[in-house]
Length: 110
View 1 (cartoon, rainbow, N blue to C red):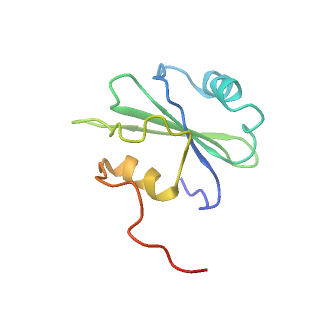
View 2: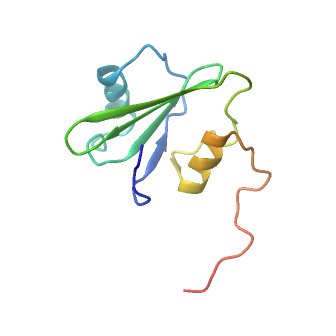
């Protein structure tokens, strides 16, 4: 999976049945995020136990699904309630890191 850093990353806040494939997940995306399915955004889906994640995205010529199963533990729940994740939060979620603080320590002047 090699998405560029400029695409929005959307996290589905409801648990999803992981038996869903391209059609089922794209129907969920259209219901939750109307009109954003073919924009190249990443759409993240977690199961109820939070040990499985599926990522659906449009590559320009078709859909792709990335799937990860954890053998132990679960994905952190600290990003719940957020619609769009930053790339940093996305990487933290995939790595299983639970951040203690979700704000930056400083910001560079523009």
